[in-house]
Amino acid sequence: MENLKLNTKNLSAISERIAVPKYNRETIKTGIVHVGIGGFHRAHEAFYTDQLLQDENIKDWGICGVALLDFDTKIYNTLKEQDGLYTLIVKELDGKHTKRVIGAITEYLFAPENPSKVIEKMASPEVKIITLTITEGGYNYNEATKAFDFENPLIIHDLKHPNAPKTIFGYLTQALKLRQERGLKGITIQSCDNIQGNGHMTQNMLLSYVSKAAPGLTDWIMDNVSFPNAMVDRITPVTAVEDIAHLKEISGIEDAWPVVCEPFKQWVIEDNFIAGRPAWETVGAQFVEDVVPYEKMKLSLLNAGHSVLGLLGALIGYHTIDEAVNNINIRTFLKQYMDEEVTPTLGDLEGVDLDAYKQSLLERFGNINIKDQIDRICSETSAKYPIFILPTIQSQLANNGDIVLAAFVTAAWAIYSLGTNENGNSLNIKDALKQELNQKAKEAKQNPTAFLELETVFGDLQQNVLFSEAYIKAYNNINNNGIEYCIKQINSN
Ligand code: CS2
Image 1: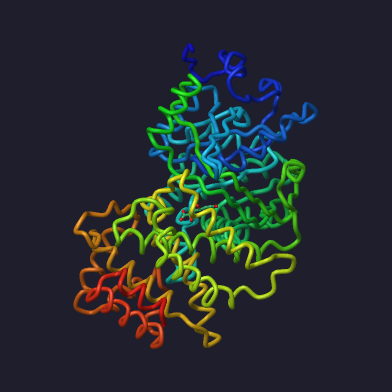
Image 2: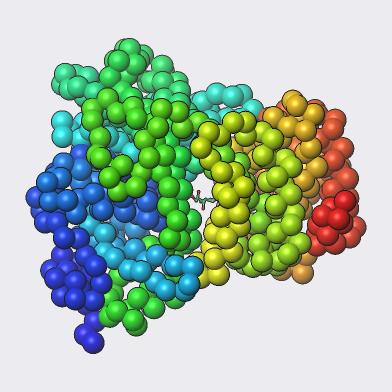
């Protein structure tokens, strides 16, 4: 079998091996600008949109993928080399791989190279939606002040250099200014990140920035921009070199950056699109009036569940999420956390079978084929914890609910932040606050609650006596007896 590089020229030859877009990509107009073209976007929104574009009557919803950060050079170059094409490899539960080439990204831009091109694209009349996957930390929200962080050096930069911004807020502000000047009608800005009320968060943070950068724009934004909330879901591990090699070996396709993901996918979106939207519901997305309960359920069960497995598993020395959840002690711990500490905070979820949802999470976490990396899950915990775990604790404390398991996970994170697991092997910690976390983790050896002093992560949690006591107890217990012993002990109580 001849090897074929993935690009437009080879697409018809590739179609003899795996599914490829049936539509003529050259006739598709760009209706969406998406910022953040990592694995998740390409396994989720771009996948849904690709399915939609298979309908030959739909021509308006091509995606222009924007790489915002210098860090994204490699992904941008790959997409450019491959004419925006990539292979999506779905790792089924039975071990099979379902592969297809996705064609929805019809244009791509590298913001650091040409900021004005990105601004122009966002301001162009055919663009109706700007979608974002900029990670939890990308919204520039400070948990300690509960407000936009104007001290972020990148924000200071953007305020000084509006035409050459570095953050999403600088880009959006310039683009919206142009739209206002040109008398263009409304546009939707849609977050695809794991944040409670992600649409509200986007709106609030953008309006904060605009209040300093372009105060005259505020009213126009209020009247002309909609910010739907949405719950997004599909587990998408980091592509491994083995995935690239395997694709080449089995299919003879040379794709420098395929995306791998689980079969499950979900997208629940508030129907609030001021300038129209793709009929994503025809390819499986759900449009609802109020997405908040779904988001809460997903963030506090799935994402927090991931963090629980990641932090406990990392200390034991595991590398993948399936290893952690298939350890019966950790699994029992997680089940207890979900049932006793999270479920009471979820309120009424009409039409959702919560037990089935929790059971399905354990199965998804346990998928031995996707090998989701614990390093990925534990990365940027300082941005994830305030969204995935802290609200559960706050709600439980307010209602005299249990917080012992959450306190235990927090203590495990403090020990994790020292940088070695229980076997003495170093941990590959990736976190914007890595230094600060490590410093506090060292202080915590003498005084465990020092770790909770990081207000940008914990807010005022350390002042809560119930929580601090449970946390100190867990911290000392883990240090004295090892994590697995303590987990067993907790499970049997
Ligand atoms: C994960 C998410 O980053 C994380 O910690 O929990 O990336 C998770 O895999 C996705 O949200 C699944 O939808």
